[in-house]
Each structure stands twice: as structure tokens, then as C-alpha cells.
Length: 178
Image (cartoon, rainbow, N blue to C red):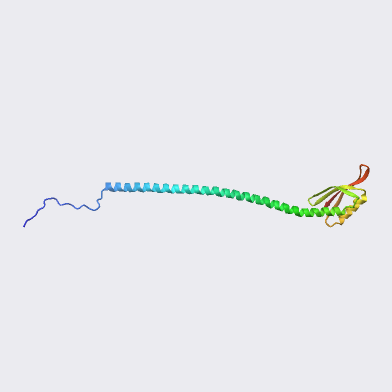
């Protein structure tokens, strides 16, 4: 029987985690630095994304500004065209009305005894000037105008004798309201 004696010191088992404060400090410093670096990288990427989005939104804003300008221009043209159409419709209505007024005046004229030198229509009023052979023709003309239902007002401004070349004529001026 042999006895073995081991004079070597017994090896101590090393613990799985050795808590060395220096290593812990360095490890935590590395973790903090890495988290700061990754945070900055993440923030930088977010800033780049936001800047790209801002540029894209500005481009869309310019595009929409052009569209809005076109819309405003079209609205302006539409209002101008609407105004033109309204004016044309009013003129068509007035044209028929003006033609009727002119027709009534011409039908009221005594034939071959008077003629008109001026005929103007404005704001539902008619201004007439002309010459007649005598005062009776002017009176007959006024009476004929008053009989027409279209005229609400018939006023003689003046009627006076005037010598035109070798003829003595009656110059007259009449205002009509309709």
C-alpha cells in the first residue's frame, strides 16, 4: 500500500464572477459610452429623416401653392366670365327693351311733319331732340307718346321757333321715362 502525499498547495476554485471594482467601472463606462454613441447615431438618423420629410413637405407645399394660384386665377376668370355673361344677358334684355322703346317713339311720330335729330337711351330714360313744321305736330307727338303704355313720364323741355336755311321750323326737346 502506498500512500501518496501531495505537498503542493491545493488549487483554489476561482469564482465564476470575480467582482473587481476596476473591471466593473470600465465595463459600465464602456456600456454608457456605447449607449451615448448609439443614442447620438439614432438621433442623427431621426434628424435626417425629419429633414428629408421637411424637404418633401416643402416641395408638396410649392406644388400645392401652384395649384392654389391656378385655382385663384380660375376663380378670377370665372367671376369675370360670370360678370360678362350677366352683362350680355342684361344687354340682350335691354336690347329688346330698347328696340321696343325706339319702336314706340317712331310709331308716335306724325309722318312727314317732323324728324328727330337726337335720340338717346340711358337709365330707363329717353332724350329726344328734333324739328317739326309747326307746334301742332309737337303737341300731337306728345299726345301720342302719352297714350303709349310703355312711357310713364312725358316731359316737353322746350319748343321754340328756329330759322333753318329758308324755313322756319319748331325745334323741340322731350324727356321720356319708362
